[in-house]
Length: 557
Image 1 (cartoon, rainbow, N blue to C red):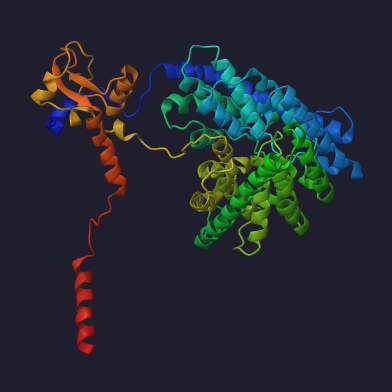
Image 2 (cartoon, helix red, strand yellow; image 1 turned 135 degrees about the vertical axis):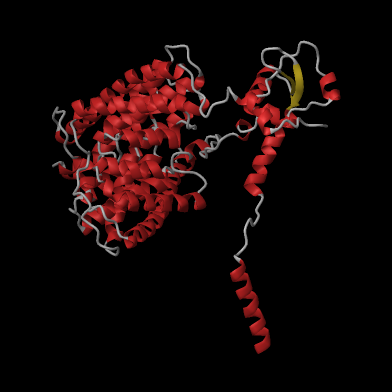
C-alpha cells in the first residue's frame, strides 16, 4: 500500500485555507447575545445577594430589610438552633414539588446540563435556584452565593439561547457566559470568572467560546460597579512587591498542606452524601432539615460559621484572627459545611473553601517566614480552593482580584500549583466532578489539540492504482489540504469508512483515504507520549572525568 510522497513544499499549496483558530462571523453574533446575558448576570447577582440579606433578616432578626447583616450577631440564643432546620424543611419542599435541580451547589448541575442535556436547562431552575439558595444561606447555611448564581445566571443564559437557532456548542457558550457573568456580579472578578469557564465549564479553549464568555464577564463587571459598588470585595493592606525565595518555598509547603486539607474536605462531603443515601431510610425531601440540625448546633457553638462568612474572610486577611476563630473555622465550619452539603441542600462551595483555606493559612503561617498581614491566609485560600476544584489558575487569579493584591502573584501561583499537583496525584475526581461520576458520567478535564487536527489528508492519502480503481463513480470526496479531523467528522456524518481525495476546483481524483490511514496521526501521538529516549549525553569532559575516576579506583584497588 503506497502513500503520497509529496514534498513539504508541494504540500504547501494545499494548506492555504488552514488557520491557527477556527472562527467565523457567528462568534460575533454570540458576542452580541453575550452582552445581554452579561447584563442579566449582574442584575441576577444583585437580586440574589439581596434575597440572601432579606432572608437573613427575616430568619434571625424577624424584620424585613435588604441590608447585609451576619447571622452570627443574632440574639435568639438556643432558639437559633431551629432556624437552619426550618430552612432545610423549606428547601426539601421546594426540591420535591418544584424542581430537584436546586439540590446541590450548582456547578455539578451546570456541568451535567452542558454534557448530558445539550445545554438545555429547565426554566424552573432560574426561579427556584435563587429562592432556595436565599433560604438556605439566609437560614444559616454555611455556603456562598457563587455556586447558586453560576447555576441561576447559567440557566438564564441557556433559556435565552434556546430562543435562537443555535447548535449545542453555541448554547453551551451562552450558558457558560451567563455563569461567568453571575460569578463576576457576586465577586467582581471578571478574569477569574473567565478562567473558571475555561478550566472547568467550556471543555475547550477556542475563540468561538472564549470571546463571548469574556464579553459577558466584562459587561457584568462594568454593571456590577454601579449596582454593588467599586473596589475589591475584600480590601487588604498591599504587600511589598519584592518576594523573597524563601517565601515562595514556604508557599509550596503551604500548598501541599492545603492539598491534603482539600482532599479531606472532598472526601468528607461525599462521605456525608453516602451517609444520607445509604443509611437513612427516609425520603430525600427531609435530608436538608436533618443537615440543618447539625448546622444549628454548630452555629450555637461557633456562630461565625453561619452564612456566607464574608465577614470572617475579611477578618482573616486583615489580621483580626484569634485562636478561637481559626479553630472554629477549621473544625466547626468544615463539619457543618460538609454535612449539610451532603444532605442535598442548596448553596455554593467557593466561599466556604476560601474561608477554610484562610484559617489554614493563618494557622500554618505562624511557622512560616513573616511577610505582611493577611498574606498567608490569602495564599491558603487560593491553595485550598485550587486543590478542591482542580482549577489552579482560577484560584490564584481569584484571590488577587478579590483583594487587588497582585504583589502576591508568585506565592499564590506556587501554592495553587503545589496543591493541584498533590490532589491530582492522590484523588481521581474533584469535589465538582465526583457527583457526576457517581451518576455514571465520565468527563476528562485535560485539554489538548486533537492529533487529527495536526495532520492533513495530503500526508497520509493513498495514491496507488488499486486504491484509486476501487473508488465508486460519483463518490463524495475530501480535499488534500483538509485536516484529518475534518475528514473524520465528514465520514461519521456520511456513515463511511473510506473517501476519495479530489482536487479543489477541478474535482479530479487524486487519492483515497480511509480510517486505517487516519490512525497514523493517532500512532504519531502515541509515540510522542510514550517513546522515551535520551537525545543528548553528558559533555565529553564529564565522560572522561568519570572514566578517569573509574581507572583511578581500579588502580587503588
